[in-house]
Amino acid sequence: MSFSKHMRIIAAAAAGVLIMTGCGAKEHDAAFFAMDTYMQVKTYGNEDVSADIEELVRALEDDLSVTDEQSDVYRLDHEGEFGVSDDAYELIGTSLDISRRTDGALDMTVYPVLRAWGFTSSTGYRVPAEDEISSLMEYVDYRRVDISERTVRLPEGFMIDLGATAKGYTGDRICALLAQKDITSAMIDLGGNITALGTKPDGRPWKVAVRCPYEEGYICTLDICNMSVITSGGYERYFEDEDGNEYCHIIDPASGHPVRNGILSVTVAGENGTLCDGLSTAYYVMGAEKAVQKWREYKDHEMIIITDDNYMLVTPGLEDIITVTDDRYTLKVIDDED
Ligand code: ADP
Ligand code: MG
Image (cartoon, rainbow, N blue to C red; front, side, top):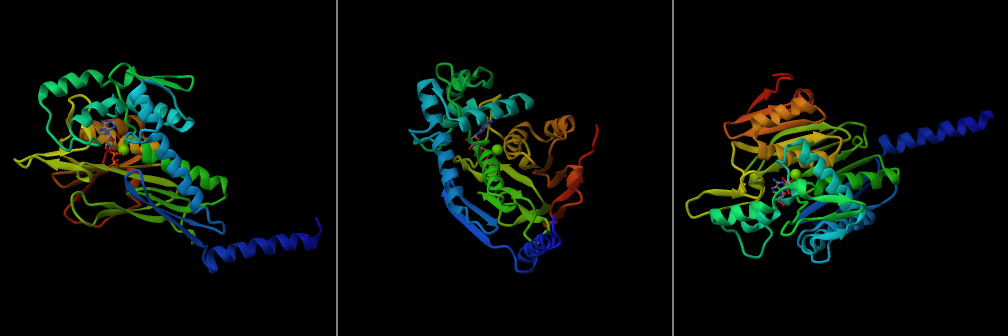
């Protein structure tokens, strides 16, 4: 290589650095409503891929929606057998893996029961009779979902819903699209489900906040790079009966009832958004004690559990990157071992 060519390459690299740090990378903003929530994706770099991002999310929604009559999931639920898209196939497979590792706390077949409580159905919210719940429980068992050769089969009466993992999966797919486009810095916010790609354009970590359950404001912030931070909480969607009893949109597949176990929210952070989303729902179902046991068993993610007696249980890996912003909660670092 001649000397001058070498110099040109160095000069080009230096110019690149200048654009990134000195002048700031160009920000592009995709903002739209999809999957029942407001989504915002900020990317940094020269190319604007906002339209591709929105197109990808809408295509995923068309596959995965449980209410859209054209979607793969709807057709599977109503036809009992369907050759689903690659995305639906992959997400169903991954969600079943998470069901196995959480002993069925995550269970996509809970849908008939969820509907009976009025979630995503046109009947409106209601408290079903116990015998109605127990007869619908016959259709709840993720082990009966048969998935092979691109086709999914359900026993008679079974229906699935991927609401607990779809947004985490969507975050992962957006990251893959951005990688293809050589974009290395982005903030993906899918209705509070966060995936941060790389660092901020200035090289510092992204700062993301975890919401206070039931109230405005934030309970803590995390400084993260290349990580998803996904929260499940009953406060996100619930209804009350005349006596003031609360019923949330996360159902315990063991009982067929909305979860109420002393947890206000579970945040799971890690590299794989689908796993974080599935685990946050499953841990919410399990309760704090079992969730901690499961974390000790796998240790492939971080988590924050907010309890109704004002504790914030945090895995040791978050200690250096968490800032508590609400002093009503006491931070307790979870022990590595029992
Ligand atoms: P959000 O969608 O509010 O971010 P989650 O990721 O926790 O919250 O998913 C909750 C959704 O998952 C519910 O709205 C419902 O569609 C579905 N669901 C409820 N209970 C379960 C369960 N035990 N297993 C799998 N999916 C569930
Ligand atoms: Mg979830």
